[in-house]
Length: 298
Image (cartoon, rainbow, N blue to C red; front, side):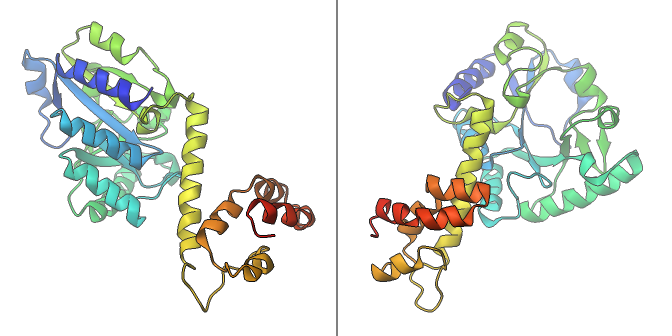
């Protein structure tokens, strides 16, 4: 899976189907009556808002509108971060529907009344991020309970797992980096009137050739690098505060205190990472000379 393959599948689908978004304007009765085929293209953003934005721009170029859902309670990104907030709004500004990706397990929900209250709260938070109302949601980490919630809407939001989507729409998903039911291409060959294709943007990165696990690891490393850059840049050009580390003596001798390039290289040193993983401070101290030589600080 990669962005190049995604574009091929997108164009193939566009040649056969009209695209509809999942929102409060959906008329399920009318959709079932009409003869023209319809595709609901949905993207649950579990890992990578950055790649979701790539897909959103590609879809816009081809005149396609799709539905993106944002996870507020995930571990791999936070929609409240400035950069992620801007990315989510970028997706919305491409003309796509942006809804809530809701995880009932985070709230220990066991009944629909409690679920409605939690959906409303999360939708309100996401609406603040987008500065626009939210009209739909999809479930994350589905359970027997959430899969039994088949009403058209909860908390005023259209449910992407309603009876209509379960009973009247043919579906495929790339969950966990492989097609769960049939491939997207196979679904197109079946010529159904109404289909839903669910993707998770992390898998569809440009020129990606890695299997799912390696793709996730790569994504985590990229996020880690970004966080390190942000922290190290706090000290850039500082004359009062010092980014204290075991490299201090070497950096001071070279007049390189707070140098972001050197500190970024140090932070990614295989020696440093190995010692931090094992919590072996003494070993790291003994390896500092080797690290300093690699960084041209000796």
